[in-house]
Image (cartoon, rainbow, N blue to C red):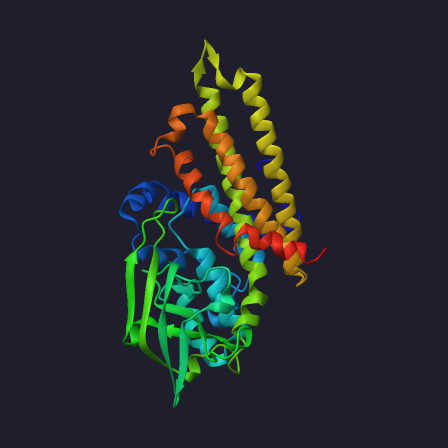
Length: 382
């Protein structure tokens, strides 16, 4: 919100906010429609984002990052959303993949991969979902069988963000098929250095059309045992559970920025558009609808800010993270729907950003764990 300042905001973060906002407007916004039509943005944009210091902002400086906190990531993610930049999968790259490596990687792994992720030389992805398993991660069928000092990985993944661009992929695999949660490990595949790794098609989607999303195939892919995240097998499920609150907070942040941007677009439109001899903004229904949208967006922003401060202190629990993911993504869909309605027929036209924002919003209720799973997690705390 233009008149609301988050309680965690500092002068340094405000400077980052300004720089990030200008970067996304200058380098990305004008090209988003073209990239959506093409189904992918140019690979070089990762390098530009890295050069601008917008990748791995919360990774320590000794590993090539900017040495900030997750507040720095939040500012960048928010400005990306405010500029309606849908092509850059930085939430996955910087907010998820880099943090798995930073949290569980060895010193050698961190020194090898994180600096290149910060520059954009390496693009990160995480291969969780399979054709037969989504939210139920314990049922993954991809296997990583120990063969001497290597793992042989076999399986298939789908709906993988950054799948076309990624050259560093964290794979969720079973190292012990007799176990459920305790049989899962996270193994890093350096895509350009292995055989048997195949990128499938860049999937056509309802929304987020400029962001590459892929099927991945692993046919006897061999990687060194040194690419295991953690000091022993079987830790993967617990590593995933420990990091999921941050992933769900990222979804909440994206929802807030999208709502704010949608309200801004709708407000501008209804002030300019005439009907029955006056602007649409002059109708009480329009003002009431926007008032409702702004209030719900503000509530979401305050909730996310509270969760962020708890996360910065290391106190964001699984239940609250599930709440923020469910509630904010639900409100994002509702608010954007109301804003689109104010555009009338033009809101249904693809060249109007609100139309694509409506389509983009729908997946927020699905990835990071479906909203039904979020409610189940919340219910367990009762």
